[in-house]
Image (cartoon, rainbow, N blue to C red; front, side, top):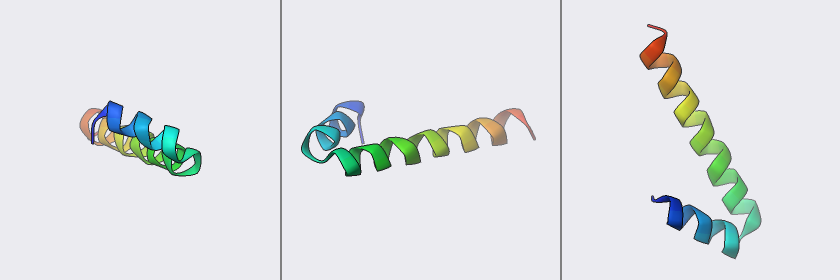
Length: 38
């Protein structure tokens, strides 16, 4: 899913959009931890 799609979700459904961003940040954080903290 692209950033534009994410923004469209936020525009169409604020709750869903917020959830999507929260999960995206969690996934990115986990990837950073795995990559930089072996």
